[in-house]
Image 1 (tube, one colour):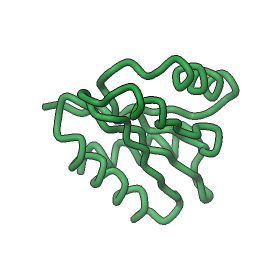
Image 2 (cartoon, helix red, strand yellow):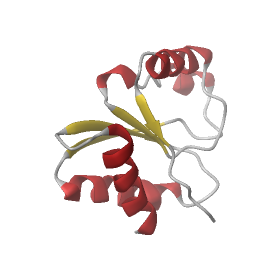
Image 3 (cartoon, helix red, strand yellow):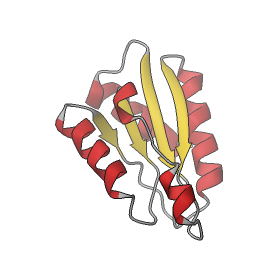
Image 4 (cartoon, rainbow, N blue to C red):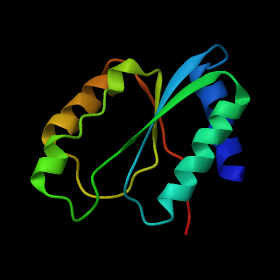
Length: 115
């Protein structure tokens, strides 16, 4: 819960998210219970009432190339991307899209999640 509150506070202060803002949570791999964490983050953001939230999950660590080829987050459709991800290197096209999103002024935050 503390992580979720910190995330909300950073979004409001850091990105000026006082009106309805769209948030994309990126996860699917991490060194902790990412499924539970993502659920809590999503619900906490929705409960505030000023965020619309979508979640995109990367393929798992054992996924084949076809699964990675089918994963294409649409970063540009969101005001803020929450990176709840710590796993396999993203495909080059996804990395390039993310870099373009950030260099174009897209907001990014990464919650500090411990084991």
